[in-house]
Image (cartoon, rainbow over all chains, first blue to last red; front, side, top):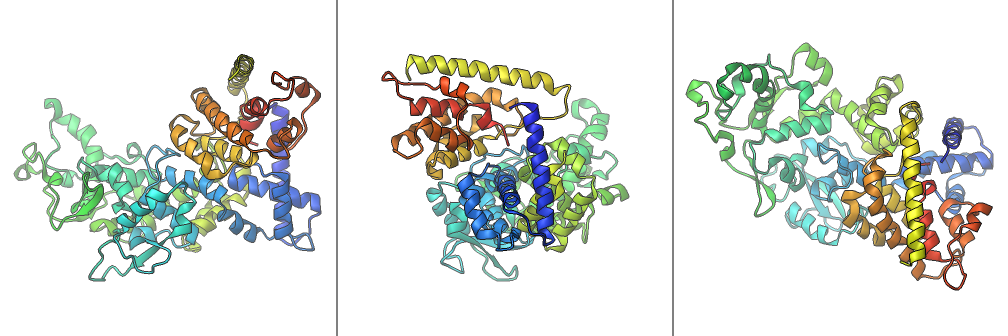
Length: 403
Length: 152
């Protein structure tokens, strides 16, 4: 493809977008314009160039006699199409499942939960603050544990689009006496457990949550000035015989990570059952290698699932925008803090732009300083954290056409 | 694959590499960027354009996905071309199994690119030993052409 052709494509996209804006405020577009608008919308949403006959079909269905396009209805139609679910949405939930943002990861219960949440138009924070299960569509209350249900499903999954056709999310009151079969939020799914709870010391959970949901790599929030109080007994305070190594390097990451990893103190990953398990006492990995720097010398001994977020300096508050408590007990309270932060809003908006507008990380960073971006991120909150609405607003905004 | 097709494929690969080389060499001096379809977009568009059931071709995608382009960067093609060729092979083989109205060369161009072939393209249509256009060979060449894998 020649550069002039690319320029022409960009210009036609911009023109199409301008037409879209007119249509939005009630201007009647002529038929050629409408074809262009629909072609543009479908292309942007699916990442695939629509065929003329498909455009004609959409034209018939979503443009009224006055030539006005019902954009919202068109979006809803595309959202439920297999090509969209197996394309853009599959890539989106895969990228959201790992720190490397790999787009073609195996579908698992973590991805399924995200996908079902998005397609249902529910508040995304529900995945972070509630017990939920993946249940068959024909049952209101899960008859079998959620993971088992998902495994039954997994055998039949040929594509992501099979998931919303057969399954839905069911939540349960956290105070219900029997929550067997329910996930304690997204971070106790098998998918998350396999990647970040399996083996290790559960510190990876914190690194991954900050990376995936707050768009913040640990290198950007490590801080050697933070209180080392919570740093575990397994961390050498004089690595290589040099205390300054600990003070300048190890401490910077361990202080904030170890202070929050307590949230997962009762959780481990059982590789035999391939599932996240919950114990009624602190799992052994928390206090292993306790002789390296024992509690009587100042090493922290984890006794329960209490956690504290140490990233609360004025700079960090401005950066993450914490709302509400910055300390608590257990996984759900930690994930609730994450999902209620301002940074969560902006991070989710950035991820949507990256996937649904085909933007590189540099392009996303540049776009994120614009007032339009701020509005989209703010609207995500005011519209009750519906990722579906976020995607719709984003692909219909100017941001998709800027570099 | 016939020797003739193999030769054509080699020529095609050379052209692709020239295209990549030329594009990459100009990237540094020009902020405008060519983006290619990632592996998933590529396979879904093949399915859509060649009218192959989506789930049929997604099975091949599952097997090859680790080597397919994972982002829109043109450099991702370097390691992904081999797997893209396998997908194009599977898709064109599948499409070739079923007789459809559009399966002459004009129909193939229309299906893949929404246009008729140019005169130059008509002259380079691959033919079988009987002198008839080979659906599979032409389909494969179009599926591996920049016009198909560059994002519109």
